[in-house]
Image (tube, rainbow, N blue to C red; front, side, top):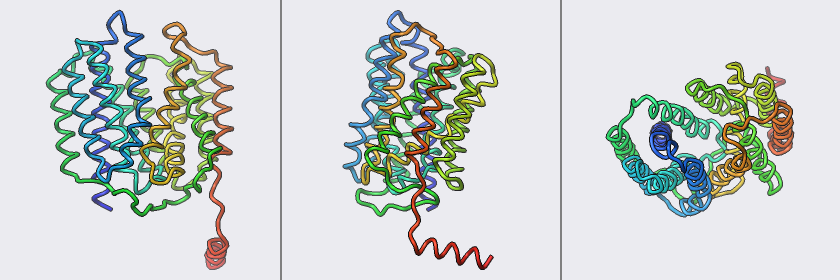
Length: 348
């Protein structure tokens, strides 16, 4: 167990580092060009759209480290080539996608329904994105530093050893729901797409570090609370309250309370989808990022800096909460479990 925690910590650090380097390279290179809109679209299509097929390939590996290592190597190349925009975007997008699914399979395959582990793995990415953008603006990170950071990640990933192999015994964690049916999986994915649109369309003040911290803490705490509370109740409360806060405090710093709450649902939906596809944690992970991409795509033809009206944000987030309430139903307890609980209640 201690070794699994070490592996999870290393991959969480690598996740932070990969996103930091990707957004440093993007914002110190392609985003400042005349073709910025096209290049950002290409990056998102590669980084988020390819995780599902790459994840399906990683699921067939007993050792997913090669995918994560190759991803880090491509990100390093993207950092070095950031003045050659299309080459840099191709390396960054492909590297990001490969690392994410490789890391997910290596750390989450044996416990796909563990929202706490999922939140711990993905949460640092939000900080990496924020600090990468800030470092590009301030010059706090250099090409050499970015490449060195990726080399450190490669060394740590290789040194920590492989994760659980294919067909490993799956461990359950407290309060996780039963595997979802096809309809419930679709509800989860649709809710992710809706939350993606609402999150990107909200009028957020340009406080990057506060936004990154809010998303980081929300994902982490959402995973932790999933051990204690019913998932559907937690998701409904946080998405609805967070969404309404984002809708009606547009442009104000208080909106980041909404961002914090909004992100509670992320590890819940991720874990629910992965658990519902036995032996396909990488594919499940990739489907959730594909849903994020599809939720963002409607914003592409709109003017830069588009902010959706409050009633639209409110309606969309309430709809997402409604979907999650039905998708993440608590697992029905079997008769022996109920009898055991009743005996425990009687003795106490």
